[in-house]
Image (cartoon, rainbow over all chains, first blue to last red; front, side, top):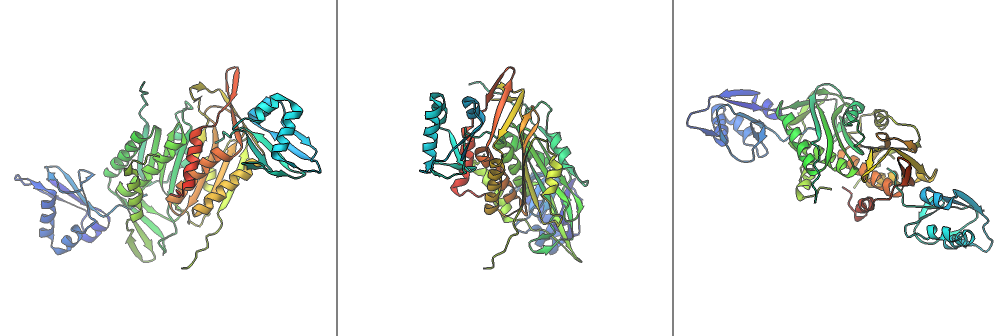
Length: 84
Length: 84
Length: 164
Length: 164
């Protein structure tokens, strides 16, 4: 399984904080996962997840480009951070 | 009168914390005052007061070069500062 | 040339709802051996206004786990750049009101240069890397605070080998 | 372009033998109106060793009157360069022991950039301009601490228009 998390504005816009997805044996990468989420949930999700400044993290580390995913990974989508 | 103060290492080397000098009617500047102190107190004072890094202040403001003195002025000689 | 082995700095990171005591935090940076000559600290507060909006309350959301890990990574990076003796970071989450303390960063070193630089470095990267998000409440409306471009620029300064 | 009148910052300078309480000092920088977003502080401590010498005690001499005036001038200069809301400086004089606090500088502003810069600016110039002198005691011998050339260099940085 893959755990997918959404935070802050993204969480509110999608109306979803987290979901679990099976990890296919054929393998999956971050871009494929995002495309799958957009297809399954419709254009509302696509508009949000494809935003220019969307941040993606895999296993709590921000990923700049694409990357392969492995069963058990934790993926997160969130807007630019505003702490401090 | 002029008030002359010495601080820290300078004070210890001269064995003097402060002294009062009459301010001559003919006028006096900082270099003249220093020369007068060296003449009156001997080479021990000259060695200290003519050190390259000696700091001179007039009325609690550091003076880079020479400057005229007026009756009532407070003159100070001290080594580079080491606070903080 | 002899290489001097510096002890690993003592690092503490906390993400919490509770308020914090700056004096106690600062004291926690001292080893008791009088080797620290300098402590630089930063405290962030909730302001009553932000970009001309009145702020009545602030809600701080974070990514549990990643928050602590990313702050620890930032502090460790600072400790590689400067000879730190100890460092601590506390960041609050949850509901905050104007005047409340949000964040505290403290860095101890033998001299002030490294304490100051490390403290500012940690704040600059905490602002741009640690997964916290602020939501402001003004009357009936609430909105997510947008990231400041100037924050990215400040963090970028450190990439150019500027270690002072 | 409209000019915004910033209120004059609240400045406090104290030269004293007594120890100080960092939490109370930091609180003194807050107006209570929740306009401060950032406080940067620096605390200097007596180290047990300095340039490889064991330090058993430190005697801090100063030039009464000029000390306060020069620190106030430095803080005022910082307030011209950065939009400070308040600033405080405490410097101790007299006999100090390793581990003792010597100096505290705190600066409050709306944002961290100005608080950090002003705090470091004040420390850099306090080190090079304020008339304090340290005498170290090690066993039977005592000697005056020499000025550090690096301190002059750090103060010089600010002359080159580096206001960040």
